[in-house]
Image (cartoon, rainbow, N blue to C red; front, side, top):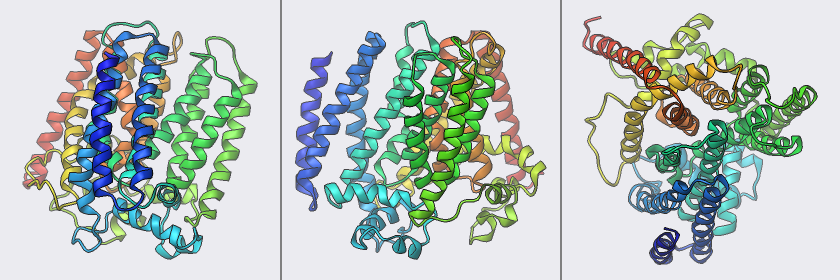
Length: 478
């Protein structure tokens, strides 16, 4: 099987290198070298993961990786590069602006004054892509290659932790590897966005903390602190608001996850103190890079009050009888009550709107909407498995709390997204996609059929009732 992967790799390298050299003006040669490193290095990492986990069925990882690279190049040239014309009527989407502004940051000698001038909240993302452009040249291929490599490392880490949590191997465990091919992740890797980077960093920080607390596999305190600390610092720079779910997740893990080997009371205290210190340093880093002054209290207040949030103060266009507008909270009680239905909306957006016209090129929303739609359909089928795993993990927490590592990380992140971003936009949920897939996989591989049937009935009944309300509200029957 590996010989077939090498042959496919050779074809991909040949085609991709020719494509880069004939279409990219700046940094084409260095980008080809990056492409070669990412392709070969990624395939070796996949093979190493399969060997270390001792699961022959994970040989499929290499093929998934090469397929991902092929799809990435297709989406890059057909869906993303045509959108990088600033004169386009569709210009203005954040990833489009990041592509230009990252190079402008280099041209302005990495000055924080430039960040202040363009009023960017989370400035670190421009430094991230600016560094890539500085090394490999300002072209749309280089950041994509870095993005997919980061996503691969995060996916392999998810697989590693998933196998540790599950314990005893069985057939079809390899299906966790499908995380590499989840539709919306394929699309967001192609853009100069911060969603996939944020998702990977959240995964590194939370799962590392969970592995340390549960002691599924030996991991030293120093190694855990380094991985968590670096992840938190970069999160602070690229999406400061997501520091809060990281901190909450770690605290919940300390309270709920019991080590199978020792109490580790002192080590847990050291880790919490370290994380708190890095949290504070991270806020300072964001300010130093030119970002805005993030205040936890103010952010929580804004999330609980639609009238003080950009969702209503900005020039937003709402559809008639908008469900999203209906679920805008005003106060703590509404924030709590509206959170579950908002989470469902985040899972399903853009459903039920499946009839929007699609153009292969020329519109920034079409490819994104299409791949978000694919992921939403997948989410409909994933949730019963994730809920079954959640129920089982809570029931068995006293005998085996390891599965809570996935669930605490996933649901705290997802609740933070649904509760903190009042405008329901599919791109925000991408930060929880890795973890949601892990939870669903765990449910499919470890839960009884009867439990899955019960959670499926609960979920689909909820969807039916929600659909009836949607139709009644939209058409004026309610």
